[in-house]
Length: 425
Ligand code: PLP
Image 1 (cartoon, helix red, strand yellow):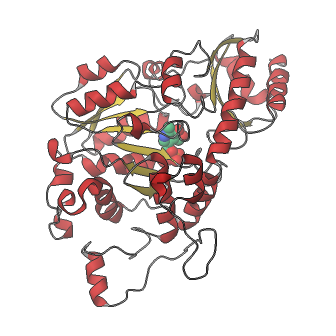
Image 2: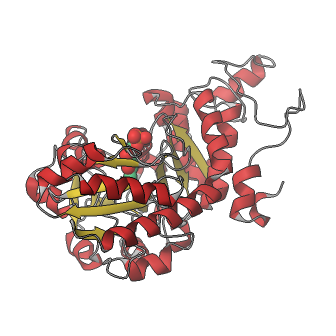
Image 3: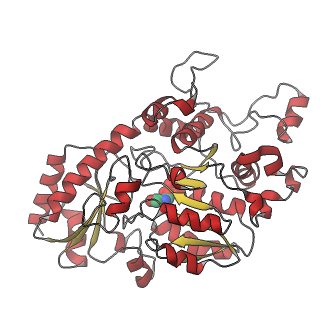
């Protein structure tokens, strides 16, 4: 199929796949192999020198994973994707592939706790420092850019505060400063396409809504192919790569330079690859993404409206409510629905908030999002517990905050479960 001519729901089912040329199998086979037999020694040499494309070793490429990568690239509107073992591997691979020692990243402050730890604790140990700006305030980004800043990073829908940044303005600021705009679209997948609003690199935890069933870890990086690496200071991309006999990625691979480099060099050397089985599971999940996301969003809106009127609830945070600070941006950017996550502030603080996670019966109490099942967690004592209090507050994680990742069950059952649980508190 010619992917570019189809709409998203069609791409989710078809992009990247044709019937298996050998067996005529209709679904994508799981190529559970570590390595591939060379045709001859000339081909082997060319593959290793990046002069020919083809399979060498599953750490670098795999036919099942290749379909997954092509499908995500088609859905997100990029020139190429690279699948990784997890969402964290996607974020670290993406940033470490184009930055060098001493470089800085400027990140929005409304982030998943694990990303915050990576940025504030681990990256500095690897010679990359990250500064944080209020994700809702583009001028805060403008004021914090220094001559060492090499990229702006935000989440499309901040997990868990659900803030939606001003993509248009942030991409403009990034491009005026000749640095790429990187968006983690984990929570926004199927709702928005950050590349349409100026993102140069999109990362996902595919563990969440791409897979959608809470059964497989994975991540994926997509290159929009829009960023001109030669316009800024990116020797990691533009200088000859001595580990490949001095090839120059932009010269050889044009606007796919970044994603080729991430695979050929970083994935080869650091190795955070996905298993073919997980690629298969994520591909299967992707087929129903639009259906699931629509139902998640419908259910979340119903739950959010029910909780808004409940006497034991102090506040409800949901981009689909006019009371949400990002509601206007949600209407502009979230064209596929307002999303699956609802934040709730319990009256009475930390204790009743924790109690709610124990009193529900249908919701699963665990630290994840992106499951068909409804999930509940108290972020201040779990996913964001390691953050200092001020940074936790900045990320929108108050002590009385409970995060609901609404599933695709019958919404009446979800409301009954929450209603009964709240009665017991
Ligand atoms: N990005 C976001 C927004 C997340 O919510 C998560 C995990 O919750 C990650 C990245 C990390 O993904 P993974 O758990 O697949 O490593």
